[in-house]
Every structure is written in structure tokens, then in C-alpha cells.
Amino acid sequence: MKHQRVNANGIDFAYVEEGEGPLALLLHGFPESGDTTYRHLIPALAEAGYRAVAPNMRGFAPSSLPADGSMRLRDLAADANALHEALNGGGDAILVGHDWGGGTAWAASVAAPERWSRVVVSDVPPLQFFGEYSSTYQGIENLNHFWFFQMDMADEVLAANDMAYLREILQEKWTGPGYDATEEFEGTRKALGEPARLHAALDLYRTNFGAKQMGTPEWAAEHGALWGALPTQPTLYLHGTEDRSVVMDEASLAAIRAALPDGSEAAFVEGAGHIVPAEKPEQYNELVLRFLKKAI
Image 1 (tube, rainbow, N blue to C red):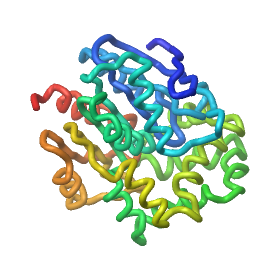
Image 2 (spheres, rainbow, N blue to C red):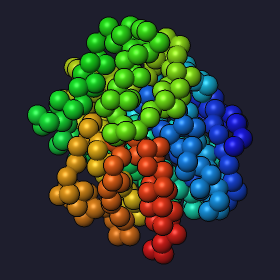
Image 3 (tube, one colour):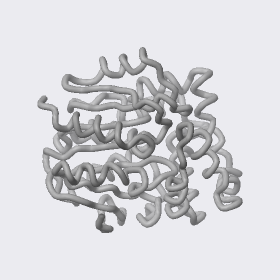
């Protein structure tokens, strides 16, 4: 894998790249990094004839911090589409997202459908489903980090004892039984080890799901405009059966599949927690590559 840099949407992005062919842009989530989340998918896509590119999102080292401090979803989506432009992507490019990268992929693919031929998302369902889940008792309890991260003390707590909180939540909650999350944590330390980086990452939650904004008509209008609509491109949605953050049953997955456009698919990845691309790479890669090869 080659380590590269490119400027897009005013951000100096660091990324890893492998392969030649249509662009496959891979977007990671919190508190991860592109090269760790997609370490198994990158070579698989390269072998399948794609140029796989996994950047670290704005604020996550070694990509630059945004000059205006914004970690808003609208800017993350603009980053993805600007990266498509800067990396000379064509109409045959594919967009892959997990967690925050998943929310970004929903928004970016709707904002610029001409840029992306297919979309793959894991672990964060479309807004209409995520919003409904997040307001239930189960959702509020399972997404309690959303609410904790609003507190000023979260910066100090997450940084303490060599980021012990993040090490524990990665191992005990966000990955499935028996999975060793050491590599995920090492990626977290490199990406968010500096106070300014950690603060920017927490701003993902504070500015997009702020305590005084979430649920207001203005908030609903903003997020509805960003990722309330579904992609028009064929889309693959994948979700771990052991995800304890966004818990989903067969009926919910079937409803997502029914809402997506023709040619789309939705499937569970057995035994995976919330970081499906890294936890169950053989199952995940097989589902992704089969979907990309399928005639639509």
C-alpha cells in the first residue's frame, strides 16, 4: 500500500492506496482510521481491479484539522465528493462507508449521484431507520456514548490513561465476542492521540447531535436534506449480528432492503460487532465483491 496526500475541499488528506482501475473511496468511522478499518478490503479491491483509496477523515491524523473547526456532516459529505474530483474519479467510482463514513456515504451519494456508480454502507442505517432507533429506549441506552460525548469532561476522560476508555469500548462494546481490537486501538492512538485531534473527533457528536439541536425542526431539516433521501444507485447495506451499538433484527434489515433502489441488497454479517469490515473480513469482502460484480 502506498501512503499519499491530496488536498480536497480545503483539507490536506492523508490516505493509503492500492491498485489500478475505477476509484473505490473507503470512508472510516469513529474512533478509527482508514488503513486499519479497511486493511483487509483494500488489497481485495485492488486484486478485483479497483483503485482502493482509504483516507483519514478531516481532523484525524495525519490528515489536517479543518481551519474553521467544522466537523459537520455536510462538510464530510463535501469532502467525499471533493476527493472524488481530486483523485480523478469517474462515473464508475464506488463509495464505501462504515459508521461515520456510512453516514457520509449516504449523504455524499445523494448529493452527487453522478460521481458514484454503487454504494456500500455498513453499521449505520439510513436516517429514517437510524433516527427511529435512536429515539427508542434500547437505542438511547445503546448509543449512550452520543450523550456522554456532549460533556466537556469527555475530552479529559477519553485522553486519560493512554486512552483507556476508547481501548475498553472498542474491545468490550464495539466489536464482537472473541475479537482482538488491538489493531483498531493502535489506529485510534495514532489518529486521535493529540488533544486537538480528540477534540475534533468529539465534535462529530457535539456539532451534529448537539444536546440543544438534536430533535429541533432546524436539526431535522438539516439532516433530512443531507441523508434523509436514499441513494438512487444500487446499494449494499451490511450489519453485524453482534452489533451492540445499533441493534437490528431481521424485520429492520428487510425494511431497509425494501426501501433501497432496484439492484440493492442488505445482509447480516454473522458474528460481527460494529466494525464489520475489520472483524469479519472474509464474509464482508465476499459480500462486497459479489455485489460489485453483479450485473444490474
